[in-house]
Image 1: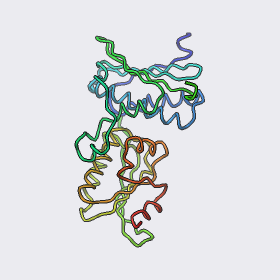
Image 2: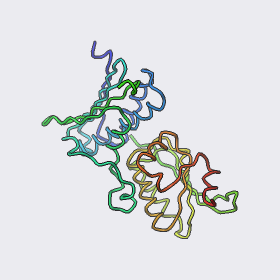
Image 3: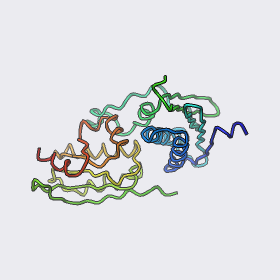
Image 4: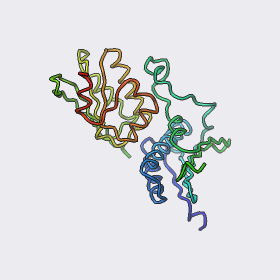
Length: 146
Length: 121
């Protein structure tokens, strides 16, 4: 019961569009915790992008594979783990370069990880083969504290 | 589950300056499923059109794949020497557009009037 008092778990099919279930659940939790509207919007985008990555790259859009989402409420932060069956991002992802994109030297896509890293306070990618990997996102009620 | 559909309305409006502007009014979600709605609608605009206004007032959800489609549209517009002005983005998406650098290629305006005025500036 202790586990249940501070955490919420979801299992989503690897089907684009279902990231909104995680996004809206996380937004509800964050609002209950007292996060500002601006921080809730940041979290919504970050968690949606993490779920899309998990569906597309981790689970290769195989609908028989689930994306797990675990929301853990702390006294002053919300931790989100997004789990998939893949290996996690390989190597460091460069920030998008809009000039290179506009000149078609870089794909127009590929901004998800950059957005996640820019919008939450802490991000890590944990690979645990052969089980899979997860993204761990932390958003703090008062980021100025750290 | 079906994703919320992207709705796009193509209009021509007469700005205060007297200039005729083509407006793409987006509503709903803009995601990877929006390619036909975004790029297909853009392709319906004649190449002779030089001023395009993007209205995001009705957009509820925009993810990185949707932003990539907007960038692809801007690349095509740039090749046709078309100018794009933007308005109606919710504050969070204004922040996201700024973060990824799109604001280097289109200005985000608070409303349609100021976006229209920017064409004649």
